[in-house]
Amino acid sequence: MRSSIQFAASVIGASGVGFAAYASHGTADQALAAPAAAILLTHGPTLLALSIMVERSPRILAITALLMIVGVVLFAGDLAARIAWGERLFEGAAPAGGGLIILSWLLLAIEAPFAALRDRHARKLSQRPIQSRLT
Image (cartoon, rainbow, N blue to C red; front, side, top):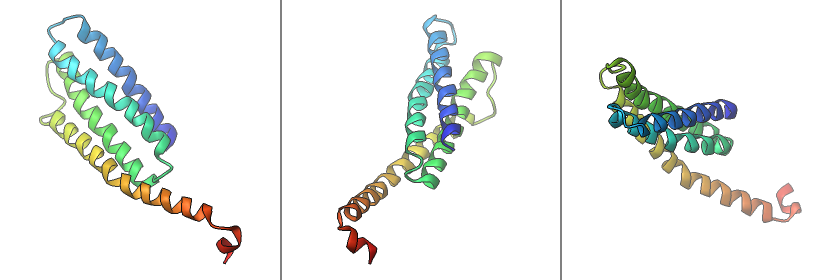
């Protein structure tokens, strides 16, 4: 799972750089390329961080990463389709992608306090004498 998320993060980040370069040339499509670049360049590093954290809460963070990847692909892919073909991927692709991105951030926020509790519990266990951990 970790390497799959890292791969997606790398492709998303590289795509973001490409869109940023395209937007910087002042083309007529700049209004579409700039938001795509912003979404891609924001979520590439975020996914890279999630790939490192995924072992902490494998189920919830893997779901979070998957939702974020699909959301980013839908959102930026819709903008890319409009630039390349002059048409949307499908009706509502960008809003659906944006909704998935928002949902993924909310899942990450929900997971945070549970991770803090797990970390606190693990610290308490590690501080107990060995004899008391055996009984």
